[in-house]
Image (cartoon, rainbow over all chains, first blue to last red; front, side, top):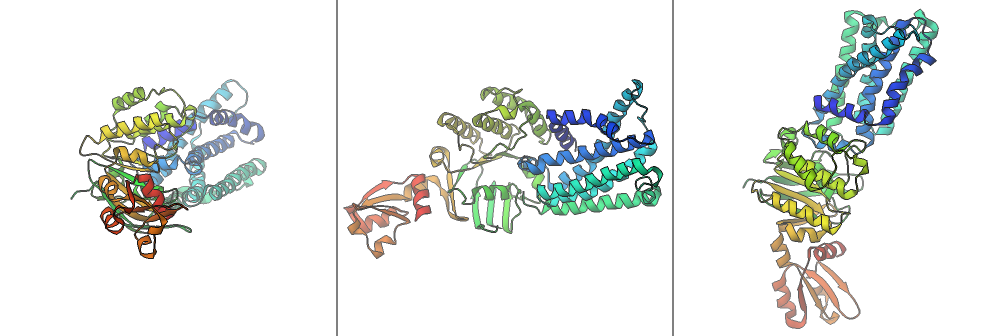
Length: 210
Length: 284
């Protein structure tokens, strides 16, 4: 697990492009999306960053031939899949810290009033991230990179449109009204979907030619 | 006998190519050269051994264990070198080493540092700045730094200069001085194998042509040269491959004694090199 996360983060931050993206994406989102409540900006950043971190690590493995290296190391396909699914929680924690510090600085400098720590939004963001990755991960484990990236773009745009919609219609928006994700039943539903997606991805990856 | 690598009736089907009923064994303490022309199935076989491709049939055992069931345990004892650099180009040698090292139970940092020094590599250099030879040296340093018992190499010497190729061969030769270690080495540069291999496995069009001790191969296969008047329907059948010109013929046979019996002193018999064996067998 640590090996995979360490690898993903080292690769991610070895590229100047990725670092610039990580730095400038926060102000970019603040600029383009004017949220009617500061907490929703926090929600949007949590979802975007965790999702992007989780998916970026895939692009190294599926588009390049480096997948041969990973799969030749003492680790089996089931473990690779399991670690990928568990890694989103690590990325979520990293995002909370990164976004928290970033937004705290923005607040402290009085550039804009934003939430930088909000448990309610964390609880709302995690199911959205889990549902999104439940759809995208099996696509990456099953299909060629081009097809998987189409699935990723559809999910990514849906999140983006969903959040923009949240901005414009506020309390009437889809994200705001995701009541089916709330409470114990909602939590079980999301966890169930995530586990189902995990099992499916394991089956796909174990039987796939690299 | 305990084999370090056993491949039995291995089969893999693709749209335009089939690896058909591949079988061979490698004992501990030996180097096996895996030869064949491009597209013969060498890389496919290696990818199947490493479980990068899923087989359609047959069995692969490494250290006496099924390569899929005991995948993790087996890969912990395998050092791999592939024909291309599959490492992350944006990382430095040290960063890549530290990622790979975390997966192995017996990673030896001192050994790695020793190889890096011996190969004259800068640990702070990014992988993308390395030449092909340097990348190969780096792959080799990784493969040799976790006390692997089996080194699997897919065309490690292709595109390298003779000096560095010789360096690699010397390193490999030193490795098998330890009787428990073996090397499985695919290449189409057959002269490398003539120097160090103990066994030769020849694959062509997805089928094993032979898998034998190198000395036996070099002893039995000979090049026969003579006048075209000696060739008829019956004598032609004796040749694995035959090249005819206006003045005579050159052909490969795998039974020197039989040739002597048929042609006597009318032909010239020369030792065949592995390259001759490969070329004549492929061309026919």
